[in-house]
Image (cartoon, rainbow, N blue to C red; front, side, top):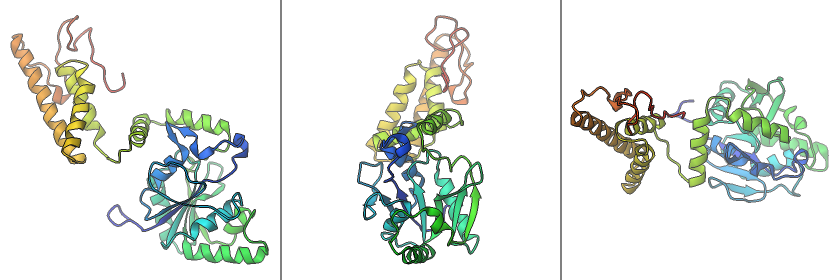
Length: 319
């Protein structure tokens, strides 16, 4: 499977549990890294042809198809069966709604592992080696057969049945992933996830994703390019120029109804302008052009200047 040849799949997200260990809190709505847990999972399966969420409808970051098991609260096996009834793809990625570190790359790994074998499904295992059947990719034909047989054997349908009864009937391959398989069952888990969001080295990515969800933006841009532009504007013009310039670049791209390419073009134009501005400032003071913002080497002035220099450093991306 490659980025240009993705495996077609549907996604089934189970989001209707009682969350008893959270005191009955609406767990999918709990925020980690500024985003509801459900929205984080939906972002990870954005490549699905169709996403079915088994739960009561609620606002989400992207459109989904809603359904419920009958009766509601019938457990994960009954919920999985309800979701499967609304899928048509040969493969279904089945996910719980409480996976804060799930990423689209994880879903792709599961699908690749499934198709590399003749297995009925591929699931993640956690840090202790335990199976996580709600972070998995399944062949829908095998899943339907197993669910049908299980319902017939139980004599009372699928309500209340444990997932291990279902997975025991399937030939599964396993993909170890302690981070992506981390789920939030307790408030301690929530606190741990919120802390790890800020520790695992992707704070900026997390923040950008949260902002895009909050603003309803579905646009991937070169973050490094924008950070470089902000640095150039701060170094070559004035500190407040950094956020204002990046805002204007975004506004210009939006006015032209452009995508990432329009943002990049506007950013390059603004960076070149910042460089010219800095060169003119150096020429006006009779100083050689010692600093070239576009290369990341700031110009230097004495203390007290509005421009960065010794004793007056410009803020970098982390300040």
